[in-house]
Image (cartoon, rainbow, N blue to C red; front, side, top):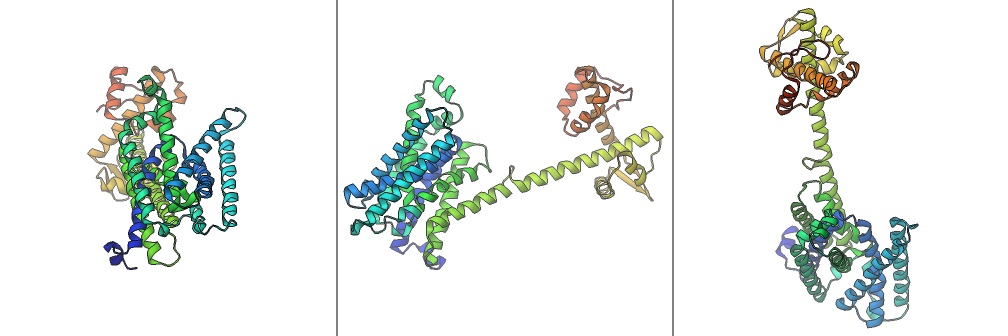
Length: 426
């Protein structure tokens, strides 16, 4: 299928698959945001595996793959898994991860046994039931899509209506309780939403991959913002992108299931978010650290100029003299001098360098901050004189004008530093 045919939305099978995927993805993204912040990611994975025996039992009882019956069975099994998990946690000797693993393995194992029983039972309606393990978007019927659309709309509406309450409970249960909210009832409601979301989602990606559909959008969005509302919007956007691309790949290439591709696309989005998001991404972090290191290097070289002038009274200074003051690496010193020349803080005179008017003012500022901080540590915090230099070296590069003003007020416009050295004036 080419892209023009895809966006024309003309294929009835494509319509059902894409709509079903979108309904499930949006629902999972909204529920997943609070699942992520309430640290229930593994609970979601355990419930995803635990609903499978409920689906099989519902089929055994009803003899049909009616989505209403299957979802009801999945919901009951999901809630039984949560109750079992809470029951195991009452024993203080059992850790939460062990309880989750036990619930997941027992329920999923029971589901496999029931599936084998169904497959050996001769009921012709059981064909396709195994798709709940890995998901099969293309097998969705119009009834499935309608059912999932209604349930997804209901869950999404509840999330939107209770968004402030869920937000409060996710970050501070005690405060929510003090405000008069019935925390246990709200947590019961949210746990029910998780179970419902997982129950409708496994038809798209299966019980094995459902946790990825629930958690990955929220964890990806977290890299781009700190505001929960924006994170929820981004999570929905990422889910919609993954559902659309997954459906396109599935219908463009033979034997390409949409569910696993949805998870792969979400994983790619998560990786790109980790690397390139602003301001938390790895790449931006590396650039920020490099910029900070270069700033410290440049300012340290300016300090070296000032120290040589102060000690030896020379204004024309060679690179060798600069290198000897702090044992600078040759490449780093050259980089610092190039940056200082570019900013017109240093002038070149033959083989030597000297501070410009602006450069000398900047050097004085850095020295002043260094010696003010040393004096503050020594006189106000009673640090020993030989213990303050390294602290001042680290902090001088990040002292703001506001902090400098407070230091001067605390110290009373000092002129002499802790080591009897002159503190430059502004």
